[in-house]
Image 1 (cartoon, rainbow, N blue to C red):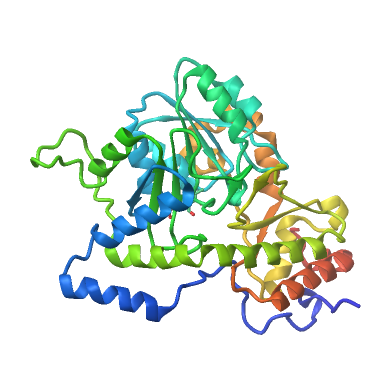
Image 2 (cartoon, helix red, strand yellow):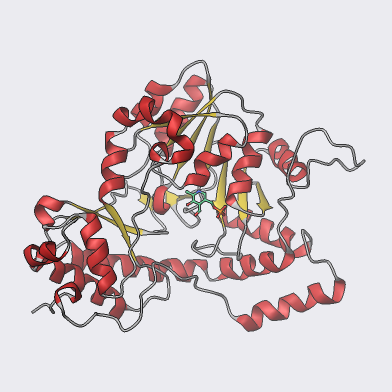
Length: 395
Ligand SMILES: Cc1ncc(COP(=O)(O)O)c(C=O)c1O
């Protein structure tokens, strides 16, 4: 027997808010012991721990080069600069704004392409149709850690001689047919911010098998200055501090164990939620492994009884934080408003997922009890949907 939803006067399921996510941090003792070295040498940025973090991430991802930067955003900006891209970039609109703003910093034009409403990732057929003489690159995203169809995108990119790069912000730990995400296309850019499985406080990693590209990126992350202090191209200060690299190294050491726990929690969520009408999940392709940076559901109002916005509000009353990722999609955001007319009608699946998807709390050290509590709240809200709807006139 389900409890009475809090929105109908029942007691909230949780005494204090369950956050959408939390970083699962390495032990403070280990981090502080490593940090002692920095304080004795005074080398506090872009030094031995950054090199170690780069070597260990390259090894983990099975790539030749990993270049540490200050964030995924700056990594994307520098990558497009290093590739000297000019013209149009094909990208999804169902993503975080940094994917799109990174190309605006390089005076590149976005060409938004629709996603597949089941995987939430770029639809390769739509990508191929969108390629023209002006296309400078394809920028794909592994949304919520679910690998995009890399095989089809690589075939298209090779056939059309277009560079293929990835915003892999969410996807450290994901793989396709046993190959780690990180080794696909010309380069991939990961985020190491606190909401990601790999966490260096703030930071990013650019992975590539192209040695010349890696060398260029190392110059660009250091203002663009060459060893003789001459400057050829505008870079950034996008260096990673040593303290962040230590956090990254220790976070990498516990990544596999965190990933295992996370996947168990996702399985629990799925087991519980699949019994509820009107709830579906992001589809993971056969042979792919998502690292589940986020656990996202799609709410079908007709079957569930309430729409995504209503569920978001009803969960808030239970002290459960859920997020409408990604809403609005990029082409409906102010910064991209001049592209709205051109793209809105050709992005039906993007608009559908953006209007109906909801991310539920997930972090690697979350308790099974919390997952169970959230599942039973969703179930109770569904069972009482008519009455809940009366309390949420805008739902
Ligand atoms: C898809 C995507 N790309 C890029 C970023 C930016 O990452 P960072 O905060 O490391 O700059 C994020 C941030 O979460 C993201 O979700």
